[in-house]
Image (cartoon, rainbow, N blue to C red; front, side, top):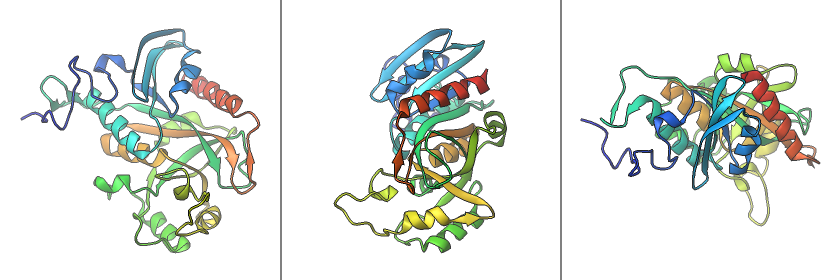
Length: 288
């Protein structure tokens, strides 16, 4: 029996529901960006653009760059959007959409996130790049899946103890990146560390406007957390779920972050667009 229509929703043209994509529309290497306007910041470097579509915040362009077929996809903001994107991309390559059954031969995609982030370490400066060795899931999304075999309880327990993590919040989960992609995309231009993934921009990342925080000292504790040399370098809203769902589904993932703010120093990039452009050019140079 195939997957029911209510579970795997297809558009009338046979494309997956949210992404508006068919299997032939995507490459095996996909660059994730959050902002839909950032898609063309990348594809302007392509030799050709062979396919383009957009539905809601999900914009995809596929083309050729230096002989490599690549796709660029905007995910929007947050772990809930990543849940949609990862599951629908996997359905495109690993489920026969006509029979609605998983394929016998499964495909592994290469997923590289090119995003922006704020640094939690004073020595990881604005306008630098961070390659995330791990994602620290603080938002709870991954608890809806069976993650025991891909999590890192030793690091998680150390973090929970060090921060006196509130038991009313979801248990933090630590997921590793793809070491193959890390080796390919890092250099002396990249910092490495653990990237914390929050479920929101303000309170969940320690920002105070008018609402008090459950733990106003959490960011300070996160800044100083160190587990055998592994530090929390930055805070954003996607990496841990990309890593977790990639591991569960058999794909490879790496998150590259342009640091446009430094939280301990209270500084913000004077030209964040240029910093993102530099990271885009760096990423493309490593792909082809």
